Image (cartoon, rainbow over the protein chains, first blue to last red):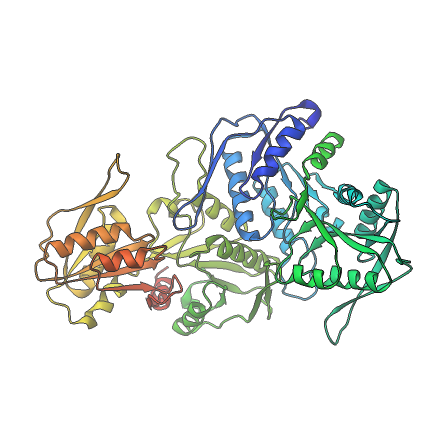
Length: 302
Length: 302
């Protein structure tokens, strides 16, 4: 495919949700940034303009969909629409945090299937390929007819904590879903540690998520929880609490998408979490790892 | 067409932006409301569910796109997507305030054409017809291949002020565009008054909008400005100021879409505006007129 990094033909377009990341990707890949102009009108409507010709170009639009999701989504739609109008040769999309991915199946009749709406509209608007970071599961990617790739930040997240003088570290998956186990395995391999997992149960009466340790021996050791999303932080907080109860020396969290909403930070601190590291898929002060080199490697492989 | 009100077959679906309005439309048209469930997840993502079967039904989805526009837009997309998934027979959409309508043409190469994105996605997601209130201009409606109707609230807005003991009233269009003149004419006819208009110029040096009176003789009379949108309020404030300088007794504003953003209210008050009346196309305390009966009449005619 012509948009392979090997061909060096990509041009990077940064969306308002990922301007800094787009600039880092440009550096990591040696692909030029396209000059664009974005603003909000006084009434709050989004405006987008390509400041240079993009007709015949292979574009990579970079726009993460962290909260406010709907705002970032409409920005992305408008960018795609404009790229297509001005006849880009191909429009490839890098969406580090792919919002609405957790609404990937219907549990009740009459429910919306939000992940499917997103995939449908991205494709309708001319996206030729999709790259994301640690997709919630394979089902979400299967909704795409265009090539859709998930890349993992787990290795980089684990590596980040090596500088913390780790003592006999081990990696923990906060649940036993396939993708979670894979991420933990990757993280563990990267730093030469073992890994284990927790099981997640939903209490039908209280509605709360309860986690049980399976075979972790945490005593005196440093634990690194590797998770894809931290939203309200309840699951990670439960896992951290149990690890500390089992005698873990320190508990670190490496998370691809650190949404950290509401009281998440308070909750995690109260549960004994020592440090949180996220990626720049979400722009906040926990974005300690950039996904730019991860994408650069991913582009080379696809 | 089967969705005509004459056939009484429509079912009304209220979106989060227009719940009360949907309920009023149900009363005005004697068409039943469809039970739905909407919520936001802790991470801010929207959830929608039909609480009853809608397969084979002719739906009228009611959702206005006032700020936050992108939020209301994604809600509408998800509702359409779900209605189509569950096989509604037809999906008719009432969008009292059609956001992004002012981005209806390109002034510079490389610019987005936002109004065209909205029309494209609504149609792609299966909308069979569109109703709106006081569309910004005809060009926006011409972007739709499905039947697209604009209904005016001008008459009702003018009528509202009759209860204010009007003295020799006249109606004013704040600019001389075709749609603005039409709205003023309708308003004037409804209350049996004359109407006039202003001209709008943009000063190339200061960037400000300057308005000049044309032939209004305002002395001692009550003026009713009839406008489609008040966003920052600058144009209306200028018009009001000039009318007061020319001796108008009172200046009222009847506006279809009272966005009233930023310092609009302060500005309008400082310009001598005596009262503002808007419609429930925008949910705020200026929504003194409901567009429900206007839609009910419009449905009968189309």
